[in-house]
Every structure is written in structure tokens, then in C-alpha cells.
Length: 182
Image (cartoon, rainbow, N blue to C red; front, side):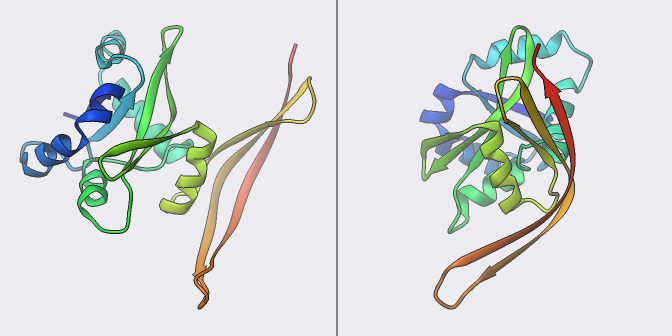
């Protein structure tokens, strides 16, 4: 199995059970992905079956390595759940007009699903957690102009001062694209 799709209802009620099953199950790959959907999991899976093999797992991996989705897999899920000082986060996938797309990140506090980050907010989490600094940031300057920063790669430096304040320095290599609405 390369991808586990769970519904929002299951994600809200059974995260402890899921962590327990994943932790003791020995026939899974630690690189397999877990994603949450606000729709029914069966809808996402049904749509995936219309696509070539491995479409869903490749969509997720592409968004983790080139898009705004922070890296998350079975291994990181179990590490976050049972490890100290960190919260579990899982990517969100949804379907609009028959097209699957990554739709942000869900964040837990303990066993409770507390926060839904948008795709662009997920980029900030990716900057904090991942080694790969890639993604896309879109913004508008007027009613007709829209810009997109394509983040090709970058470097980050985290430092913690003696007073407890954390400083994050990012050096990003960007490509700027301009779009006009018609």
C-alpha cells in the first residue's frame, strides 16, 4: 500500500487507533502516505481508480517535493504521534469538478484535529520542517494582475537566542510569473 486516504470524520475520531495500528502493523512501507479528505474517502479512491496506477501517490509525492505540502509519511506520523514536543500534521486532498488536488494540511493537538491550514499556509510549515525549500506562493496586486512566486530551492537557518526567541532566515531562489485575468 502506497497511500491511505482517511475521511475527516475518521481523522477527527480515531487518530489514536490509527497510530496504534500503524505502529504495530509490519506489512506496510514507512514511506507510504496518509492523507485526509473533507469528502468521503471512497470518493477520492473511486476517482483515483479512473487514473493510471500510482496516480494518487505520485500526485502526493510531487506536491511534497515541488509544491506546498510538507513531507509526511507513516514514519513521520508515528514519530510525531509518539514523540515529544511535536504535533501531528497530515496533508489534505480534495476533489473539485472531478480533479484531485492537494488542499493544505491538517494539524492535531494531541488526539484532537485542531487546525486546517490552507495550501499557502502549508508552505510556511514546509519551510519550518522540510529540508527541501520548494513551493509556490500566489498573490494579487490589483483586480486584474496576479503573480506567482515559484520557489525553486533555498536555504534556511534557524537560531534560538538565550532569551528563547527563535529566528528563521530564509534565502529563496525564485521565479516570478505574472498572470492577467480575462
